[in-house]
Amino acid sequence: MKLWGKGQPIDKKIDAFTVGNDRHYDLILAPFDCQASIVHAKMLHKIDILTDTETNQLVKTLDEIRQKALNNELTIEDEFEDIHSKLEDLLTKIHGDLGKKIHTARSRNDQVLVAFQLYIKNQIDRQIESIVKFVELLLDLAKKNENILMPGYTHMQVAMPSSFGLWFSGYAETLIDDIISLIASRQIVDQNPLGSAAGYGTGFGIDRQFTTDLLGFDQIRINPIAVQMGREKICNSILNGIAGVGSTISKFCFDICLYSGQEHNFILLDDKITTGSSIMPHKKNPDIFEIIRGKCNLLKGLPNQLNLLCSNLPTGYHRDLQLSKGIVIDGFEELSSCIDMTIYALKGIKIIDDIIKDEKYAHLFSVNTLEKWVKNGMPFREAYKKMGHQIRNKTFVPDKILEHSHIGSLGNLSLDMIRQKLNQVLGSDDSV
Image 1 (tube, rainbow, N blue to C red):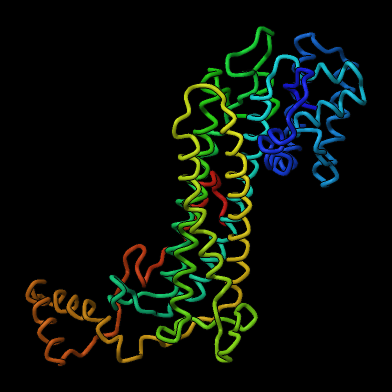
Image 2: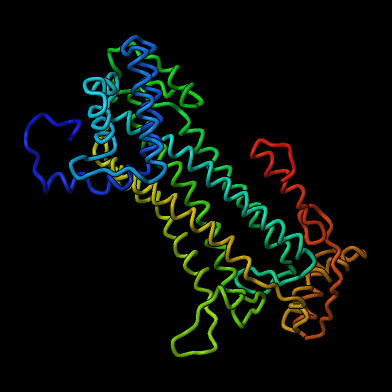
């Protein structure tokens, strides 16, 4: 069954190519399509297209189909191009001509969009929930290891003292920025497209505010042409949000791979989370963090895929946009698994204490030492030159007693402030 079918035979090769992976992705969208169809049926009742009995029958059946979809008991056979065709066919088989009424005053275009946007909203909420757990873990690790110093680097050269507390909490705060990006994407997607029909509205006196309220959208995307153009905007926004989280996690995993190597030896990885070599018995490879890093780096390329897909599309709907579903859905699935595995793998790392006792890190304290000279009255530029002279002449004796006390420093990680920032972003005053 094809919703656009006109009774003419369809070329099977063309059909298979144009449908592509829609059946797979549409099974993921099915619960949201049922949700939107339930609300649409209630709206048709409100404008006197459906009777009380008809509405109750359709809503009951749609809810049953939705439960099957949630339980992975729904299938889309090859005779159907997508969930929308399948859904209408099921309703028609059960309710006869009543099932054919469900498509009144809507197009497959806005039917696709409303299900897709409901799915994206749901996924954003799920991703934010997972990222919050990651942030909480990083803050806990920062607190636990706040006094364990480690070398800080710039240009891959030893620079100044850092700490594991500073390192962990730095990523925690960066992930809060990523949450802000996802929340901004959610605001863009939180606009009801239902009622735009094929992109130019409908002659039926539909009640768009009614469907907006029942579907839980914050507002209506008013102009039907803007609705169709909004699909690209929505996908672009959320893919950039996904890419941002991916960028943060990939950098974090790179650090772990680097710090667990013998040259640094800042971190020990539990044997259970490492792999070996087929010929080198001593190897403990950080494969899990490398795979996460690789997957997250690929996530960073998703916005470019969408930009290429939509680079030359004019106003209105075009079938090219069908391909955006897979980019977004796969992106969410991959990000979810990467967050989950990073949290899981972090349980298998051990922090090495007393790293900076190694003589090669003595110059870490050059700034700390000259700062004390400045505090005692020496002009900074003079102190800088004096320190350079001592280092060149190998007479430098480091002062390793740190006096960092400002907000966000080694001696004052201000973890409570980071938690407060997270709560503010999430719109909560409760402590995490």
